[in-house]
Amino acid sequence: MARVVLATNNPGKVAELRAILGGDSLELLSASDLGGLPDFEETADTFEGNAIAKALEASRHTGLAAIADDSGLEVDALGGAPGVRSARYAGESQDDAANVARLLGELEGVVEAERTARFVCVAACVDIDGRRLTARGTCEGRIGLEPRGTRGFGYDPVFVPDGYEQTMAELSAETKNSISHRGKAFRALREQLREAGVLG
Image (cartoon, rainbow, N blue to C red; front, side, top):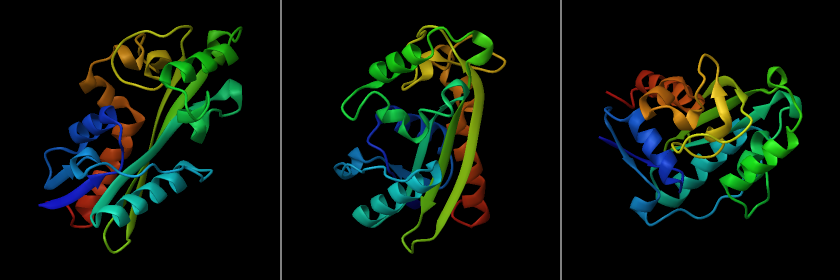
């Protein structure tokens, strides 16, 4: 069984990734399983660049193959913002609630038809020899007028995926993983890992 570290300190993301990638011949270790990972400064201007850099850093730090992702929200009315700065939209020391509050403030007065947005995720795997695999997933939707729901994290309480009236934070974990940007990206990465012979 291959041992792989998930390059995130976010327990919500660890749970999601284990649900998506679980059942294969991988032993998925979280950062906390290994005593934590050093803070990583995301300086690339693309999701791909940040995901690969995070995986490389985690692999170097642990001596294991590493899986990482970079994800964010692109809002059409804001020219694609917050984009790669989604986690830091309200400032480096702010939390999810502050990010959501800034987003809703900037969309105040924007009608529903113009609140289109998408979640984007790029998943990356780097093995101990430095070889890289990446996969991209998106989930189209719109930004609601106020937060709803208690599941998920980040912008989930204000993102309504196409075909649903509920926000991501109101959907079950199974439904969310089946349609989410992260679910799509990691399922595609899982297929690449199978093709590369990493998975049985």
